[in-house]
Length: 404
Ligand SMILES: Nc1ncnc2c1ncn2[C@@H]1O[C@H](COP(=O)(O)OP(=O)(O)OP(=O)(O)O)[C@@H](O)[C@H]1O
Ligand SMILES: CC(=O)N[C@H]1[C@@H]2OC[C@@H](O2)[C@@H](O)[C@@H]1O[C@H](C)C(=O)O
Image (tube, rainbow, N blue to C red):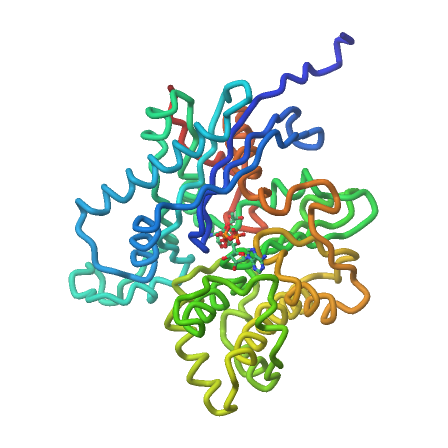
């Protein structure tokens, strides 16, 4: 080997995440080598393991603000860790054992920086006249210590804490991984995740000071409102609008979309983050009330909510990007919603809308892959956040290492 050549030792890493849709644990077994510009990944296996129904119900209740004892919180934390550990064991079947796990865990609460008023509680005990904190707050359950203990594999977890500790949102964290896996020498790209919440990474062409020009933020609702609406409108028979077929049979109510787009979040300049705390049940109930004035049927309501997701994404590019991308690459469950994809393509006119699958990176498992990479970077001492995406004042190592 030439003395200047770096030894590329690959590491087998498991990435685990359950996102804001709470639909199950995405697990990816990945072979990773290189560091940043020379980062390479190979997806050996990817699988989604649904939560046991009762546990999912309890998590959704927690996300919706259910009161809970500390004892139950600890139980749910460990139940999630057990389920994640099982996913880690299962994804290795038929493969050589993994060296490392990166586990995002399950977000149950996210308070972006400066949004302390979201804690709608009795605050008379707060030691200041008006309760506030200079830091955001984000809670992911499924403790890494237990995952390491159960699997016998060193586990990195609690990825958002270090960025939040220095004043960042702790989200979105995937843009830095997107930058190294999906940048293009000549093409500016938006990598648009459409999970429960939508988030984007804008990656300019890879030359000059391209890294400092990367941007990222949460665009607003992805599927969160749609899923809740489908459950309500189907009286619990359906959990999501498969391929967007139901919405496609309706007509969007554009005045309503324009009205909803006036909401503060869509006009906040990035960096910004959000969650089900904002785009959840209470928000949807207001949408249903607003829809009454237009006498919309179920399909029209779904078409209008789908339009809100599409329009809020495109509006945020037009408002906050220095220039429009030359290509949009979708990932996350919403990339399977053909009607949503069609609406996005229409609103983006000549900018082609594809999925990350079409450039060789799994759209279903990109987030799980990203947390495998973040754990790998943590192990190598490489920072994982991108200050232009999280709003943190600097780069920082992400994640707590639970050695085994
Ligand atoms: N075939 C499909 N047609 C339409 N929608 C789909 C389809 N498959 C998945 N979805 C949507 O994608 C959602 C799950 O997406 P995903 O797993 O990316 O979300 P998440 O990772 O939980 O969220 P986040 O990225 O916000 O953390 C489902 O709840 C559903 O709304
Ligand atoms: C607090 C939290 O879990 N945020 C998620 C959520 O889901 C999408 C969007 O909101 C994103 O900011 C983030 O997830 C991805 C994995 C991220 O950090 O990049």
